[in-house]
Picture 1: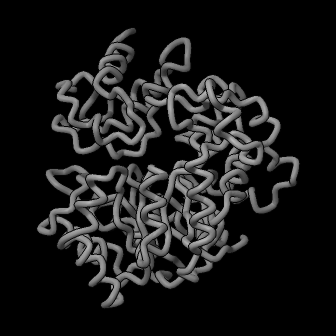
Picture 2: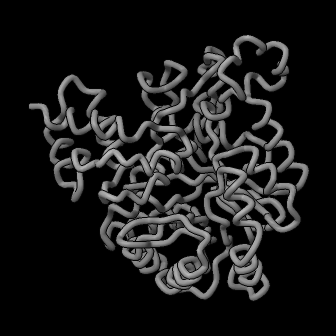
Length: 383
């Protein structure tokens, strides 16, 4: 495993990291096994944004006895309310949730205290003034969090963060499809004028972000490196060709300021797939041939990456999981029986959607969630 300096935090993090969100659907034993396997291969950075007490407890048990071998990226503002994840800046919720994170992870400090999920200017203003940011700064002063970071999908918010004097690193969504997202819908009308040849089609705002982070020594950890797995399937990839995990990882790790790609794992075999990057040949890493034929408009909006930020749902539907099962089923001529059973095992299914659309403004990728719930309900109800 190779290690990289995470900007001015000075932390030397494994370039292949661990995004913990898929552990939510696994038992304590399974969590222990995959965490131990990752640790054994040299992975040393773990993102825990999830607020579910059960997964926090399982992760805490999984790293018990080896806490010092992990850099934990813990989020301030991810709370558990009424059995669901809720993002909030309400200090009556924020502080107890963070204290709960410490307790369940069996630690008295978090290496990277993350200002959780800011994607718009309004939330930036709310978070950066008043008791929320005062609490984050106090945790830092007391040594409860060692470094302050911020998570976002929006490159403009990421640039604002990089220009502060206290945010030391960013958790940002990077992959070759997202990087080609245009600033307007009419990108093909002025591509030649607005995009320099050196960028090779990268959105100038994102290119500027990477450059700024490098200049300011603000490290980037990557989320959504595989675009929710869409890049592995030619039918769902915006390039019309499938990329491999190694190619996706190499793309991310060749962006300026990037230190680690945090991959979500269900199994030890998936950890092996990602860590195979460390011994891959230059030919196996090469993504250039695929990107050479990429459309200028690249990744279309409205596609779910199963990030879970749409929660909470008044009907308690696990929207991300329904969307994942729906996408997998829609790729097949007929819905596989095992997939249908997985869907039916969900405690709340798509047909319970009340079409309130409260989830849609929270989606970073503009997914028409209510419409997709109707489509999923119809697909899984058919014989």
